[in-house]
Image (cartoon, rainbow, N blue to C red; front, side, top):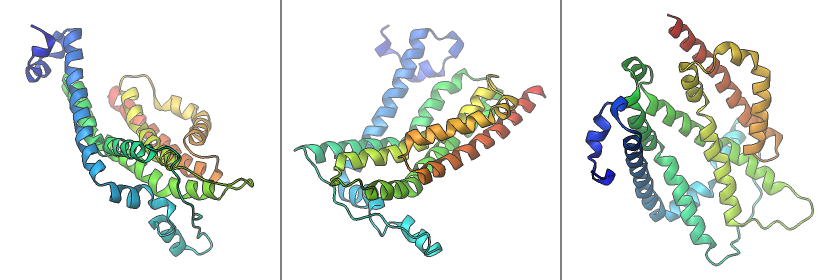
Length: 270
């Protein structure tokens, strides 16, 4: 029987130890297809909400009435800051349409993350022992929550500081940012942040299979801090404040990961 004719539900319910390599690939293919369909469907909805997506969500951090600026000013007038006024240009005929497609895809990817993690969980779950399934309970919720916290942190904290710094930086040249460059920076401020906030989950699985332990993480704490600073400088603009804003939460997650690794080590010994 051809692989395309295989009943996927029966295939996924079989014992993973009795499935061939091609059958594993077939099951994985259908999980990827379903995830892609979910992203496309959400992308269509986002595409149709053009005015709200661009005027409120994408272009929000460049406006002085953005909530982050208002909250900081309400907290202290000394810390108050606003981004300079600037207009976004389009230099290519189809740039606005291409950017619209790009924004729809990335927003759909972000919004569909819980479903994508659910498909990942459905794929790996049959290959786990009962104890491992219980230990990994809440995988979808935890991963999705950490991802959304990272994205929201990048959107509400990193992007306002970064946009203000980049738009205000002056070396005597005429500044004419394009819509495409602005969207690329907004993507860089949010999506990678959501990904790196998965650190505790990665440590959890590495500690579960014995590749990493709390003693090693404590021993290389200083090295990890330097690595976090380097990572922050890569995913953020060359702004010290912005780099510190992302480095702080990442180092906090590293310390949380040490606690997680210690609990797993204790559980394995017991």
